[in-house]
Structure formats: structure tokens, C-alpha cells
Image (cartoon, rainbow, N blue to C red; front, side, top):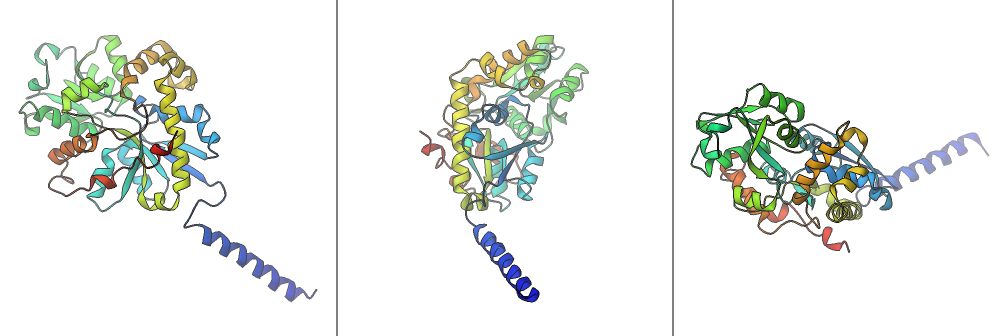
Length: 340
């Protein structure tokens, strides 16, 4: 065969393959494409279902190639999603509401936490004069970051006692070790954090529980209703073209939530990587035991939950205040409802 003819045929064949690949892109993922999920702090117990699903092999059972990555703050994870660097985020549901007011369509497809899993801790030194959020006036309160979910929740808790955000100071102290240091050094009188940080401070006696949002009862008492928090959310544009992948992810996570709801804290801890609890597995188990009530049993959006979240954000998030939000577009139970 003439060399020029052979080259022409090879070029045409290459173009045909490329065209077929491009034609497939708008629909389902081409061949088993990798799905990267960014977690807003992968060792936080509020986001435990992400790593546990991987450890239990549920992604592989669904034929998914999932890579978990971690960013310490939810807002960073959110930015990665909007930039198209990742396909999904495990973070707080409230980002879906916040982003809609900025013209971004984000949808939560599985709810992990029916409550925030957050605890407002007061330092033992400040405790004698700080019995409830009604005593927040003139105090310094720690949050993970300015504009974070913990920041809005803190302002909302104070407002329920008639205290405005101008009557106390807010200090961003992060989470984990930086939060612990802020309490021990007296830089904050109280602060909002999650497990296992809360159990660490309670065990050393450096802090006491002021407001407990790790349980349904505690959350309803503090916020007036359920507050769906940790969730798996994606961009609506990705969801429309990858419904099969979304269904598989939902199935993997609902199976994980059912595992959590049918096993003890010890049994769950046994499935986690050793570096998650280090040399103190007993403390990790205790913290996990405190956290079990927050996990959803089925991944569905709790009734009235979106309205409670919107009420909190409308009061203190300048992006949401006074804006119309279509809550029906911020989440969907379409996929979790299909899981048997």
C-alpha cells in the first residue's frame, strides 16, 4: 500500500475515534472515568461516611473509581468544585443555598448528617460566668473561619437570646489542634467545633459543653428544627450528564449510612485507618459514640431541614439575606429513593 494512502487512512481512523469520544462526553462518563470527591476535612467525624464508604469497598462494588481528597475548610472544597477540578464535594449542605444566590447551581444528592454535629464548648476558666449563649455578651467566640457555617451558627445561637453579633467578638481559630490551643491559651472564651476535637477537650477538662448539636434533641432545642449539614453535593450541570454515576454514589453512601446505623462505634472504628485515631483508639470510639445520633439513617433530606438552614443563613449571611432561594433546587432525594 502506498505510504501516503496509509497515512491518510490512519489519520481518518484517529479522527473517527476522537469524534466518538467527544460525542460520548455530554452523556455518561466515558469508560470508567475517575470521580474525585473533595472532603472539607476528611478526618472530621461529620464527614466520616466518605472514608468509611471507601474502607468498606462500597465504591468498588458499584464499579466506581473514586479518589478522595481533603481540604481543611469547606469553602476551599467548594471552590475546587466550581473550578471543575473535582466532580463532587462532601461538605455542609448550606453551601448549596449560599451558592444559588451567586448564580451557581449546586445540588446535594445524599444527606449524611441530619444535624450539624457541632458543639459549642466553653473553656473551664470562663464557665463560671458563661452558663448559656445568653452570657455571650462581651465574650470572644471561636469559629473555624469568617464566613463559615460555624460563624453563622454562632451568630444565630446568640440571636436567639437577643444578643446581636456586635455584642461579642468572633475569632477564626480553625479546627483540631489550633482550636484546642485557642481554648487552652484563653484566646477564646468559647467556640464551635466537631468530634473528635470536642471529646479531646472534654477529657482533659479544659472545656465543658455549652450547646450540643450532635443529637436531634439538642439541635431542635438550639436551632428550633433539624439542620441538615454534612452531605454529598455536585454541580447541577455534572448531575444532568452523569445520572448513572450519581445513582451509584448515592447507593454506596446509603449503604454506608445503614452500616453506621446497624453497628457499634467500636465496630465502625475497626474499619477506619489507624492514623485516624493514632494511639488513642478509646477516645476515638468515645467521640464516635457521641456522634452516632447525627448520622442520617437513609440519606434523605429531613423534613423542614432546608427551611431551618435558610432561616439561619437569611439572618446572618449577607449573600443570602433578602434573596429569593428555590430550596427545591438545592437538594434531591431522587437517587437515595431508588436505593432498596
